[in-house]
Image (cartoon, rainbow, N blue to C red; front, side, top):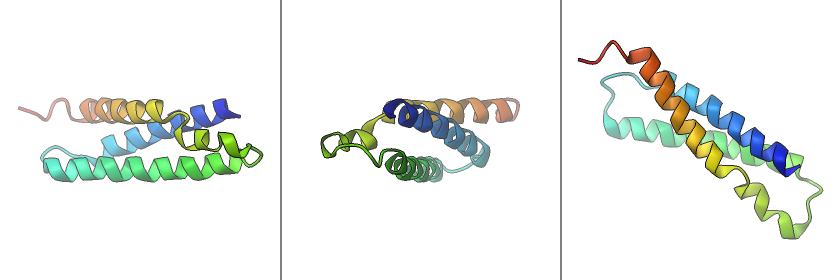
Length: 96
């Protein structure tokens, strides 16, 4: 069950990264860009947390903390990596 939550967070990190890469455009203020990425990441993490609570209904009380923390590092790194890939792929010829 925890492996399903791990992969769920990884997939949602990829989806969030692609969306962030599509939303951010060249010339966007740096503070606005950081805010957009944080809001998208927070939205998808909260979505994954809600889904993980539904998946882990039968988990014992001692392991409920794992529902919130399992797969958080792949989520963050995949979100950032795919945001950079998509942004760079779409806007590589526009800088300069």
